Image 1 (tube, helix red, strand yellow):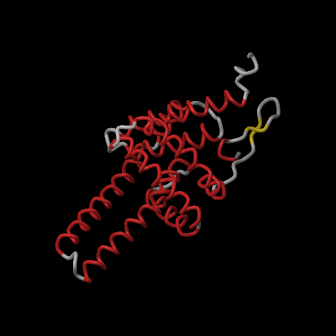
Image 2 (cartoon, one colour):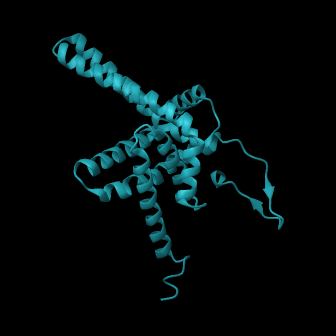
Image 3 (cartoon, one colour):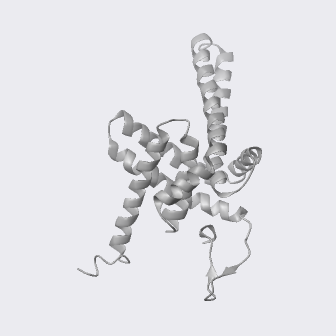
Length: 225
């Protein structure tokens, strides 16, 4: 019995991970309620997914609040840009559907709007993660995210699958009144997201100078592991 409740036990580690995923999901959903904060909350969600869930560093709330506060302004600007873009595309698609639904011109326009929306989704799938990792200007974040989306297409495809599955899960959680989805979908998605994303971001992360403790042990940054 004592061995079962040992914190190093595989079962206890799994339960701790599940708890962290649920706690992270709850925090994320609450911080998304004002809507304008979705960008900052998403940036913090990935930051915690990579640092706490993936590498077992620090605590969920501590790192979520740190990531949310530190990246609030640029993440909010990025979110507003994407929200405005999708708002315009949605309006234009509805306009095309009403006025030019049966015309060949309307079909081309609808296809172009959908292609723009897909391209924006590809860029968005990287933008908040890049912001959580690197100190860049907004233009650099968009350019780098666009580069990653095309340079690593298979990774982009995996990220989009996770992103759309998570979006559907959260939507179903609200529409179907299934709070269990809201408790586990965001945190689980963030954890899964780190596998393809961290594989890429480590390639573009500059190697920092090695540091050591007073005992001579090397200090490892969480993103280098």
